[in-house]
Length: 479
Image (cartoon, rainbow, N blue to C red; front, side):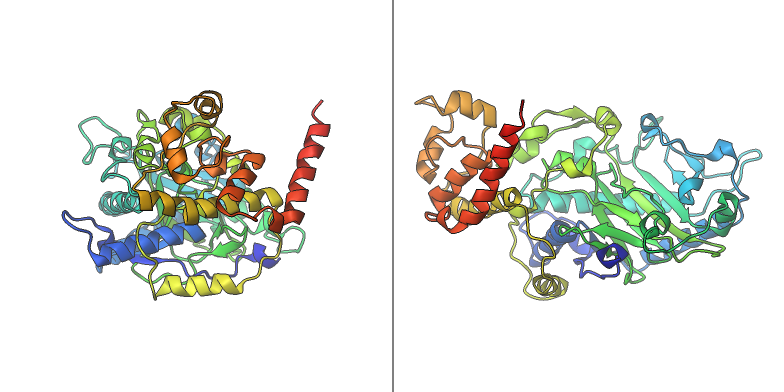
C-alpha cells in the first residue's frame, strides 16, 4: 500500500498555546519562535500540534470519556437519525445524527441551539461541552491571530468573520464542537458489513470516509482516544498525524474558509480517518473536533492580504458571502497552493522539532518528478522570493501586484501606469504584466525567470521543450 498506509509519523511543529497568545508591545522571542514553528508546520504538513496548558488536558479527557459512554449506550439508530449532508444546513446541525455507510455517529454542540440540560423525555448529552467549547474557541482565535501575524497582517484582521464573543441574546453559534464515534460494534452489526483489508479493496474499506475530506472551517482542533487521522502532505503522501500525541496535545489544521480569506496562502488539510483496526471494538474510535467557522452573514474577502502587499488574483479577487461559499463544491485538484512562496517574517528555528522535520524531508527522495509546468511555477515563485523581493526590500518598495487582465490591457501599453515606476525600479521585464508570477502564463514566466536569472532558459532546455510541446498539443486540439 506504500504511502497509502499512512504509517509515517511526521515531525509536526509542536507549539505551546500560551506562546501563541499575543501581547501589546514588541514581539517577544518566544512568540516569534512559536509563530515561525506553527507557520512552517502548516506549510509543510498542513497541520501542527498545539500543547494546551496543564489542567486543560483533564477537560479534554473527561469530554472524550463522556462521549464514549454516550455513544456506547445508544441503540442502533433509526432512519430519522441519518444525516443527509444538506449543505444548506451547514450552520444548523445540532444533537445526535449518524451516517451508517461510513460507520460514523456524531453529536454536535452548537451554543444557542443545542440544549445541555435534559428536558422532558430528552436524553442526557455528553458532559462538559459548554466549558470545552469556550476553552477551544479562545484557543482557536489566538491561533488565528498568530497565523495572521505570520502573514504580516494587521492584528485581529479576521475578527469581522467570527461570531460575537460572547454570543448576544438570541444568537446561535456558527462554530461547532463535534463529538464523533467511528466503527462502534453496534453500528457495524447494523450495517451488516465487515472490514476487508485486501490489497485491491483496502482504500475503500479501512477508511471511514469513502472520499478524503476537507473542512470548510477557518481552523479545526482535534483530539481522539485512538490514532487514525491521516493528512496528505505537500508531496501527496498520507501521514498519520495523531499517532504520538501527548496528554496535553491537540491537532490543528486549516480549512477552506481560511484558504479563501488568505488568497490561497494557507492551504486546507485533506484528511481521512483509518477505521481498519476497529472491527469488533465495542466503543469504536471517539474524537472531538472544534471547528472555528465564519458567521453566516459575513463576507470572505482578501482586503487584509492586499493591504499587506500579498498578491491576490484569480478566484480570490471577488468577495463572496459565507453562505454562498458554503454551498459551493470545492474540487481539491483545483485549489491553488501558494506554499512555494510563503514569506515568513521570522527566522527558522535552529533546533527542535522543525529541524528534525527539515532533515527528514531532505532524506526522502521524490518518487515522481514534478510536471514541467509545475516546476516552472515553483521556479518563478523561488525567484520572486530570492531575487525580486530582495531588490524591493533594498529599495524600500512594497510589492503590490496588479490583476492580470487589467495590467495587460491598461497598464503595459500606458506610459503613466500605476505600476510603471515600480516595474522600472525593480527591473521587471518589459512586456510582462506586473502580477504575481504564480498567475503569469508560462511564456511570461519564462521571460520573468530569464530577466532575473540570465541563462536560466538555456539550463532548462529539456523541461522547456516539454512545456512547449504540451502547449502545442493543446492548441492543436482546440477546435
